[in-house]
Length: 521
Image (cartoon, rainbow, N blue to C red; front, side, top):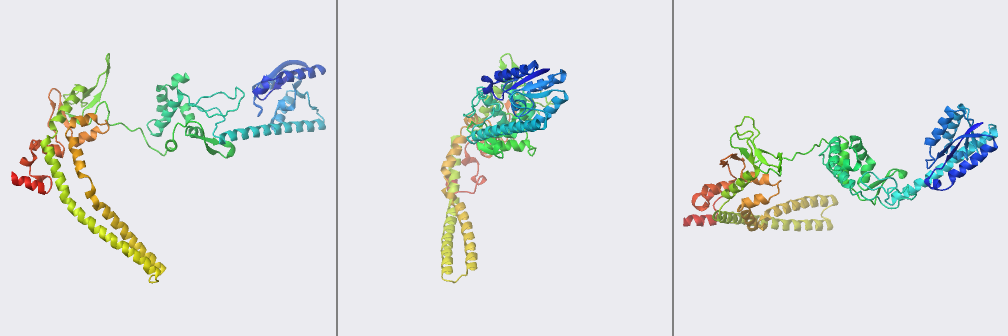
């Protein structure tokens, strides 16, 4: 009679002991006593006890199919299978191969008593496995509720291999110094709608992920990152599958916030049509949408080709029908000329003094009306407050019913609210107009410095204020004449002497200060 021996342990801890060797020893003794020739020994080290898909076990069953094996010997029924359905399913397969199951420590016979006993043993094995599974689940659930992720963390965090060391994870997962910032950047960019999944895969490789992983990032990898439970982990949450998917705040460092998570879900759902926002104002070419070609009037663009010395920055016209097409203008030279143009149109101090005095005087003239309005609304508000108090008194002495009281109170409260708004709007005289005008005049007194110091995103607005209809530029000639903003246009027309050349009625109705200046001219 020929037979094989199958030994199995269900954890690494058992492998470290003598469990496998002991099982093989008692199985060989059993075979010797029954004259079973041992053809092969199959050792299952550290495999799961949950199902029948164990590699060595399947090899053993396949061995029985290919060879005439009479006995399949195990130390105990639970070494064979820990699930009743699995037990009988595989037992039937072995019987089809004319291979009989033998248990060294338990009587298995083909008679009714033996079959019942075998069934009880298989059922007990399943029960034992279920108890173990429940204990494991309870342990993992407890760790989750403590904020510890009990499984291997997703990419971006260090895996400390607690399981291989035979230990339980008791500390939160630490960020991986290399992959954490890459995945974090990818999630944040995706939440903005700046990348598709395919583009994100390429971008992550450019940011260093390919070098770290040793292979290109595929869209399937990106899909895995965007799994719901994984995204929640990246947000600092742990989903507890043992308690109806309850979400627990994890102790690990989050990559993204809740708002970014919802944006990602919104994009993944297909509801968002958000696409990458094109940056209209390139910081390398601040004049790109302000300066036009002096030949054809088309806005200039910019480019930075590479050469032996690095990158070279140029402005140029892209109109193929223009005589200036293909003729570049050095970025530094044009911007230097632009600063000179700003200095040329900057108002002189004499103009700024008159401008400041005129605005402040005009404000004070109008402020008189504001003061009258404030007084009017303040008095009206006091009258309404008295009226409101009177309504309460009439309710107390029985002059008003409950319904009448509510109606009258609602009317007066509404009028009080409206009057307070009017009063607030009338208190404009409290505004520090002198401080505002001083700030404005200081700003326009040095246009070149203001332009140079501004953030690149604010420069286009500044340029639009000075040159509302853009400014032309021609190679070898420089900037041409352009329409200026209102203040700068007045300054240009008056050559800085506002009082002598321009009637102030062109700006605002005459004020006392303006009238005095007229009388002395």
